[in-house]
Image 1 (tube, rainbow, N blue to C red):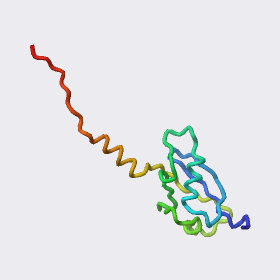
Image 2: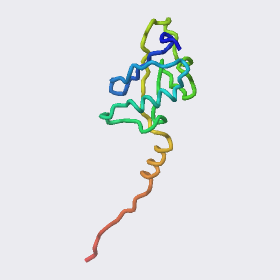
Image 3: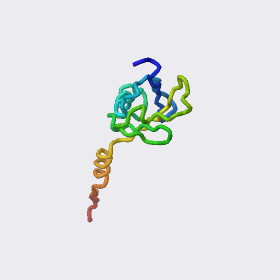
Image 4: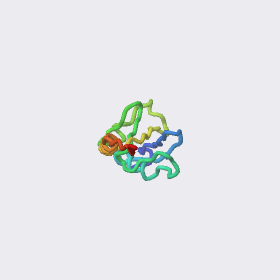
Length: 118
C-alpha cells in the first residue's frame, strides 16, 4: 500500500495528553485501534483501560463501532493533505464489571449492636 494512502491518527486522553500519531491502513478496524490504544496507554495515568472493550473511541462527536474501518470513520475534512485526525479515547469499564460491583454495594449490611444491659 502506498505511504500516501495511510491515515494518520492520534488519540486524545482525558487529561489532554495524546497517544500517537500513528499511521493506519484505511482497512484497519476500530477494534484494532482500541488494541493499540490499550498497548500504548501511559502507565502513570490514574485511569487506565484493562482491555480494548474498556475504551470508547470518539470521532466527530460519534462513538465508533468496533467493526467499522478507518476509511468508514474518516470524515471528509476537505481532504486535508497530510492532516492528523484526532480521536478521543475514553475509558469506560465494561457493563458486566460495573453491574457486578454495583451488586456488591447493594448487599444489605446487618446492623450489629454491641449493647449490654446492666
